[in-house]
Amino acid sequence: MALVGFSRSFEEQWLKLYESSGTDLAVVQKTFLNTSVDERVGEKLRALPAVAVADPIIVNLMDLTPEVNALVYGWLADSLEMNTLTLLQGRPFQDDQPEVMLGEVLAENLGKKPGEMMDIQGSSYRVVGVFRGGSALEAGAAVLPLRQLQKLSDLGGKVTAFHVHLRKAPGQELDAQRHSGSSHGD
Image 1 (tube, rainbow, N blue to C red):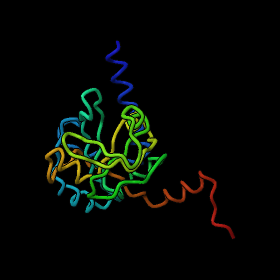
Image 2: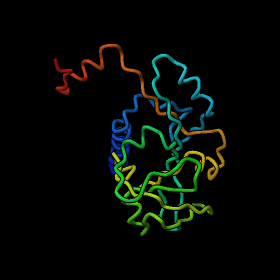
Image 3: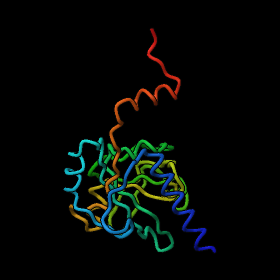
């Protein structure tokens, strides 16, 4: 029973994560937690007429200390996933820099604040921000620049998945505006 409850809760949190970022599809190879997709697939996805955005991501479970392991995400600085985070302290990371942002629960558990250094599997990173995420999976997680996590995880040219945002069908923008009560005025 406990295992079923855990798996349902885990699934609900992944759905919250996707919903908060507006992700319509996750493109993976095999199963989500055991996937490695060539980063060049992104070019093919972005060329599809229905695709507005295809952001590469990495998701990895890592030991941050002997007592603490956590989900570590690798994103691009301009990834739509960044829009789901509420920055509580500090600033967002810069692409390709050895910087990390911590979810508020993870920052508290590690006793880390912006400006401090931390080691992740033998590499040093400056904590630049503490955030509140759209799901519990982000609250206890770390976010690194995509290239930094590729290097750290020995995943050169590979990602876990692409989060795909589809283009709105003609007329959907108008329907969304009508439902939100916005108007164009006279």
